[in-house]
Length: 274
Length: 281
Image (tube, rainbow over the protein chains, first blue to last red):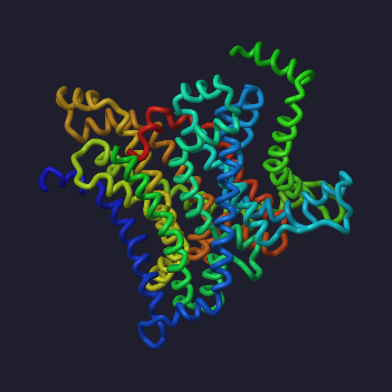
């Protein structure tokens, strides 16, 4: 113990922050979820189920769809960056794809709200170029807007991780398959992707946690019903000061993410343990 | 391949290679998806009048910029609040991360990987239930609606970057350098300040920038803990946008965007590969 003491003392302040500003509020969320006016019980969960079961399903669908689309685009971009034949096209793509990575979510919410609206620049361009008539303009400011925002922001992040993993693969098998006449799509799906899959899963897990945490984007793009549970939580607090139902919704989001996060932690454990 | 060959490639492909058709279509579509919304933002910052069904603003001008940057404007006070909170968060994070990073990189520690993972916890779960209860807690002890409360929330969120990068920066330094300083008679404290700290400085700088940007862009925590007394730029953006004032919201968004994009171009200079490869280990 004595020889560990200096190290522990130096780490202690940082761990104290985690204890008081993460662990304590987390316990508070669990306690608060079961706390009702009539003492401890499942009242908040019953109310949550009655009021928000539709939004919970809606949240799961939005996040699942966004994660799926993120995976498809990331694999496509990462695959082209690894197996592409034209250096110039690859350079352009490499320069292009990472821009949204550094754009804050709150800014993503604002720019997509003005871009995707019924009278936004996207529709204006379609009308001006004669693709559609002004009568057929369509707004995407509902669940579709939220999915677009999530995918727009998360694809660069997942691609960055994935392209890194793909680039560090052994080129030998890829060249061998190419010499045997395998198409690039087949090489991507049957050789490259299986080896890079753990990295893809880690990237997607982190993205799912992010999507479950973001309040600004759904608040700005789709705050009307049905909406995601982050917006419901904020509404419960701001409109009613109802911490019970807000915490019950919080527990639902923690359980949903917890299953996914557990996988992520196991993966990191395995990697740091190496 | 040399640059000349690439250009020759390009010339040949651009005019004779039919494969550029799908490539150009794909890249063009991607560019539209990425830069379309960004161009829209820029247009809104200089649009005096813009309504449906006009594809472009009817009148351009900088009158909203004048309103945003007026000395007593709300935007200037939010900018000041955001910058002060960011600086305080960086100071507090480094104060916590430098000793912790040094210990994790150099000293004997039990459960080292558990400690590294514990720091990741705030980023591995949805933030909202946590912020709700921090707000409740802070309300009881009078920290709600104070700058200190917001600084604490931002620090918790950024701590994993701060400590992990600091640990990587200290790990990347050759142990012999510190040992040499010690055997030349320097005390442990002296060796740390004269040898370790200067060598780890670029990595620590990178972690400071990360933490600063995280704080600058943070919305959810500030929304629960700070609002309505502490108005940072993201909160101003949100209220301006909710009120339909897209010019003010877009100018605020641009102010938030510039440091982040600038960071994208310099990050590799601060985070050298030898440090980067040790992050999270």
